[in-house]
Length: 329
Length: 169
Image 1 (cartoon, rainbow over the protein chains, first blue to last red):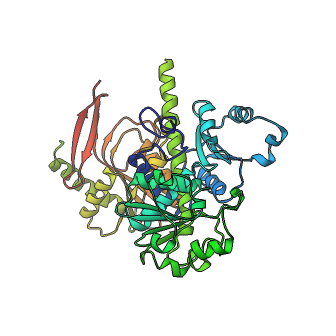
Image 2 (image 1 turned 120 degrees about the vertical axis):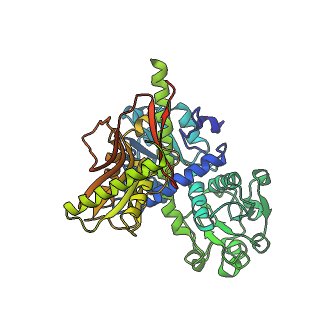
Image 3 (image 1 turned 90 degrees about the vertical axis):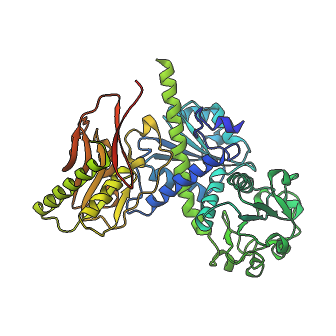
């Protein structure tokens, strides 16, 4: 199970693949560590020597701007050396297999792979086959998980709301294709919010979504009532095959977050979006840029969260290496 | 020597000495920084004795330790906070117990990431003379030598006292 593959025997993080199987204590440790890195991001010299001499490889099999650049900044602020590999333009197109590519990167003494892939389970597969001592961080795999995004959202919620207890959170939109939503739902429930709701047409909901620990609503008016945190999702047009939506226009009429519809939620509700946002498709510009929006805080927090999981995973690998060295004596 | 009265006596002689030191070195304006947690307690105590009202900075050196590759990250790291601009300032750095000198080295590395101070004066409550780096305090409360299975710990923050703990061999 993922929980054991990403933890050391003493329960510390050694890979970060999914929030499933991680307990409240560990998720809180990630948030607390990230809080300290936020302070580092506010200094003149936004850099600490923690991962000095380590090599981090950003292995992106799928396009990304925000996630890749915040991972890159996070690694650089930890003083690591960073190599960015976009697979579209690399040897994959020359027919090199994934495991050959990994062996080659390991031969360059890499210490961490940050992996983004369109296949669910890709990061997990790499974590299973990688040499001990190399940490894997999942930067999004297929429809499965995007754990650093979920954790930066948790950090943003905690910053704005103080605690998770008693909060009602609504996730709106394309839940079906969203790895972000899956990770968010797990993290929110582990951290102990009062309720998680999903609001979407049935065609954009996975089957048996209730089993994840959510209540389903098909309309914004009732779904947003008493809500503290509104999380919008992007319509993932690139993943939509077949007629899941009548039209973008009708979707916006029903599920687009406008100023008017935001009034159904609590007056101090915050509005979040993992980006990139489609203005006028899932969210009105005035809401995205409005006073309740914390969308840009999410981006800033993304750097701190990534610094936290990278240093924690590297720390777990260190523990592992020490244990191996000891048993060899 | 380890009850709270003795710590108080050490602190007041340190404050006296620090006052003289600052005067001798013509340092009239300065900022205070403590290394978390014990150094902050020591700093606050001496600040009171100096009659100073200024806020004290707090350093958590977890991100600057030189043994990360051996022991990993401290799971309970807190944000450092310097409630002043340190660039060009005379800084007074406090720690409770100094031993190898590695903590002070890490603290100085961190301080320099906030800016280039004019000077750093190092004040420690107890110096265990087991130095591994050429770093020495300017003001010391007491020198102490410990057996290899002994550790010294400052407890506080209300009433500071020192206790020697024996670790299992």
